[in-house]
Image (cartoon, rainbow, N blue to C red; front, side, top):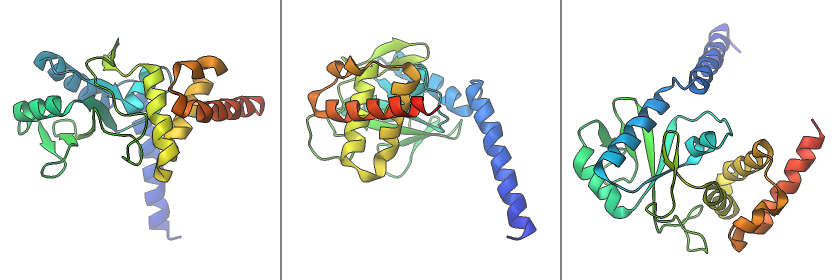
Length: 208
């Protein structure tokens, strides 16, 4: 490895450390993007629920992210786009669900109610309507923990490239010390996988 490439790797490493520190202090741009988005959605009366890593942080599992995942209805997405495209937000590509907060340089990944997690194919679990499936949190409205877990489990079970979702569930079980019978709050479709990950979390705890 050349000295130049080694220096570049070293620079990226320390830049990543600095970004993680800013994130956990609540000073990263993604927090500004979250607060801005929830303020605008609330102001427009558009039902929404924050999902993904920002929801995990809300529930106590600290994981760095550079994007905001938000659940909207198709009508809510269309309303938001008609109001705010070109006024601080742009589409990732023409006609895309995903947006970008141009002011903060943050990706806004939109989940649409009625669509399916993971491989996108029909299954017993779909993205719910945020008007009935959201709870108030410190920084906006979020998916309830059981719903967040169900969606992550369904995604990881059906899409090989979504193994990160299963790892997130395992960490949520471990960090939040969820009991085994938490599975009763989940859809039967994902209970067996939750129990498998719960057992893995106990094994991991025993190795510490």
